[in-house]
Length: 261
Image 1 (cartoon, rainbow, N blue to C red):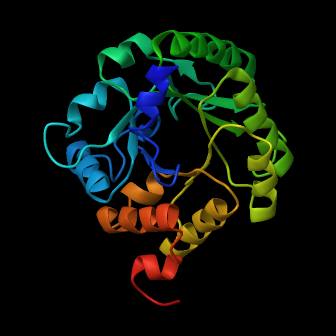
Image 2 (tube, one colour):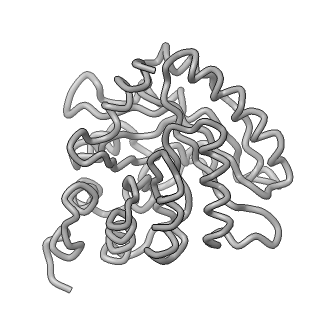
């Protein structure tokens, strides 16, 4: 697994063992959304802010900035669906691990929605991706959520089930919802042998976002995968800097933002 170890070093901070990851794959599902209209600019802002890695679809890798500026880990997303589909929770594989290797990826990611009508197909696809990741020495980030009719997406039991499924599949990193309390998240993280990140979700207030992230890190979380909550800020660079201070230094959120509560 030496290949995985080398690549993970480009994503996880060596000193803290945590990471700030900024997914920027939303254009595939949502179209030309604010914050992702000028990808090169946004990637530079996120990188300058100190983020450890970004998540892109394969066609957007060319709009990164690895030729200049601060380097940043590259995670290529292999799953896709669009909001135009009657069932946007139905994710299919749109890229291969081999393609990601050729593009210089440090890791790949897939999306699974437990409880969705096509859960079985997503799980089957995940099993094949894990096999390819092990073959190529490529770390796998599994983004997995409880989503379906009658399912509470923030239920600690449902989130814990998601994390266990990802671990049993062979995930190297896991992203899921925050269950709403540090106590519930502590139990989930303690029962898992691989790093667990919380999703950033839709845009909320700066302080509110950072407090949730602070709480997750303090009970053993590996950091955050935050997209819209980062790239749709008026000052993306400054917000990402604050994120990094909270995740890596466990700094008080108000202090990280440079103001008092």
